[in-house]
View (tube, one colour):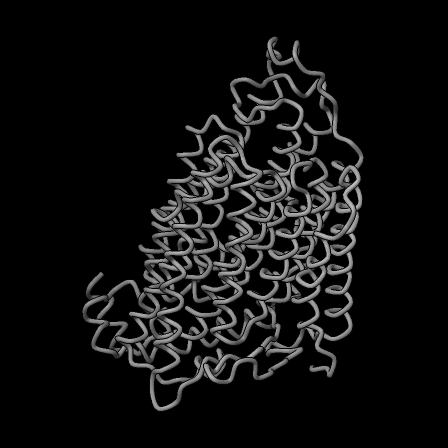
Length: 535
């Protein structure tokens, strides 16, 4: 379905253009700036809902709301944007979380004009990443999003904010170089030069070229996801970032990498994905177990939640490696689910910090008596994060397990080992999350803390923000189709295309160097016999 009105262009440019007059607005007690930024966020989110409700067909797996204008033709740059089942739910997720993050920024008193300008610029960049259909435009939006995050952490973060912000920009900017190099390599491959992502996906690349480009993009997106051992910037960034920035960082920015892995590595480089998929599965398990164990050692509340995020993104890798509709659908659901859960937990961690002025869990304790609403909301978010049945985290992780365990692209022994190790992470997450709740909210109160501060419960604004995130979490947990119907048609198409490559790739000579993980029933009979013999 297409429309003449440039809806997606408006969605991208509205926050960016609306940010321009902020330096000219009066700033009496910061109320005008806050109200204006919130109004822009609400308008943007309402426009998203209207656009997709009226002009998007969830049954259509192809691109919709397509716009393509020559922007800088001298370098082949087009303003090409569109949405499909991969991007539409993530655009809505970005809209919800960023708008709530603006509402959560009510405590920002220092340089509010600059703060809200950066928030709105980041809003535009996020939408641009998810809807861009030109490789150069995608890279431009990807880079544009980095600058506001760096400045927000560097200006409004904690005591080690400059270290955390610098580490963030060095890691992510260095990784972006691989996106640019891979994009140019794909654009100039063959007889035609194009940056159009649809045309790039149709080029007939050699296997060696695909493997090289896939590796480069995996490295680039692996930093943002993040994948072990490229993850160390994330706990530092979360530990120092203000709560509204942490909400966006965990709720949206990590999902940009998961989205890009599907869009580029799986859709555009399917032959290479056959060889890298087992590696993704192994990396996913490493993420889950390593981050879960490391979370135990964290005494900083937000750093523990950051390692929890790393562990949960490991399930996304596992789903992407499955070659099944269930697995890829589960990966999408995990991105949406974790976006909501992480945003809620980091916001509530910020609420706790606003009252106690510390994130060190050993200095907290007994807060449930004085902050019962915060305690109840924090408990609900933690239950969702540990995959309690009835909440979205349970549905997404269960779907990924079923998708991977029923995949016929791997040997039974490989699947058994991967599923067993991933299940260890499911057991570990309740332990470190429940121990976090016990340390912060149960036990005796810290006498020094309570003697110096008057601890107040959540304000109506804060409870409203948390509920806006928790209600969809419970809704999806009870009725997953609320989320899955938005991308089902697309994930079926992706899984079908990925599986079609398996029998073809099995006869490539490289299989002899990388044999028995890519196995069995979808392959030709002679390959089945070879794999059986090797096992």
